[in-house]
Length: 188
Image (cartoon, rainbow, N blue to C red; front, side):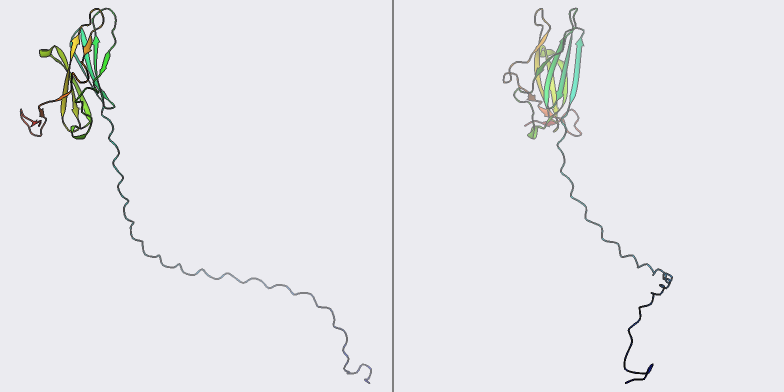
């Protein structure tokens, strides 16, 4: 037995937990560290491949010949096609320009060694009472064809250029040549 208020082995119940204490203040932010060194520059890249050359634009050209007051001639090259034109200037009405497509006549240059048609010319050919049409190609070759003037009775004058195989384009017997003086390259 123990004495009252004594020191015995008996313990009393545990008391309630006390309130939580205040949180302490946040300390100051530390200084920023030094920046790291910049790395070495990389090697330059290799250049890209050159693109393929595009197709050449087709040549276009026009020429006119007005020898007298009664007729006018034109030659037109467009989209690789060659047209011969005539306009009769006689009479009281304005006559239209009449065109003949000479592209399908045999011998017309259309690529390969002959080159592509690129320039045009027209002139009168007095010895054949006709009109001479010329085409210059991208390889420096000159081809010609002659059409006859036809008064065509009471109707406007026309060109008579014959058939595709009967009236053919012919390469001139010499080609222009660098530094030539009254000469040129002989056509084989």
